[in-house]
Image 1: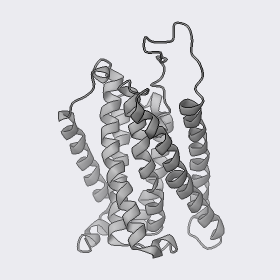
Image 2 (image 1 turned 30 degrees about the vertical axis):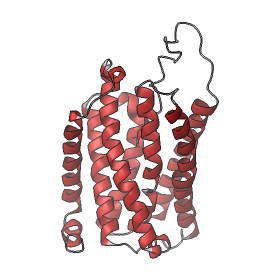
Image 3 (image 1 turned 60 degrees about the vertical axis):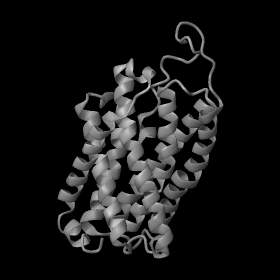
Image 4 (image 1 turned 180 degrees about the horizontal axis):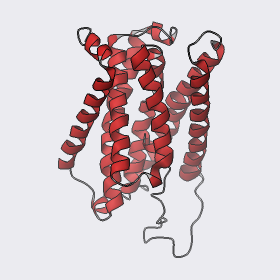
Length: 262
């Protein structure tokens, strides 16, 4: 992996594009997997299922990767600004490629209007990650930020179960508890730790103002969506009238905030 590092650092932009193409290939390969009947009957559900499938691959790979990097290299939890390893730099390249691919998929398939929150999230992440790749600063910080992908696996599972009309299954009940646990331990904790680090070292960090604003915006977003998540899974509002479907769910159940798919 160390032999690959000079190539990645010499051409970070091309590296990101290459990994974006790689994730697009994953998207095509996943088309061969079976899809639930409930998903096939609706064009939006079908697109969202495919989109989430690629997101699940990204989350499984990068979530485990980020945890491994931080466990094997404790210095990355301390020297967030300057310290990194070849594996962590490659991780940020791979993840940036995914975000480029996913943003393009949303825009080119005509779902940008309904996914504007998600695109804002991707824009903020990509600006930060690309800065990291070109300057080689904050690579450890980006790795810590990617701990949120551990939670994304349970978020994607939750949404895919809802798309398949399996939100009343025992597995959904187990996953919603695990989802809250990972949201707190990996998403909220990682974001707040990075916010504290930037605030604590604000006086000497490069472009600290930009990263502080970005972190504050991200913190507001994840707190809002955490509230929505808790309300939807643990304190659902009763629906009545023509809006209810035969299985007792509201036909707007797919209007889940798109940001929760990242």
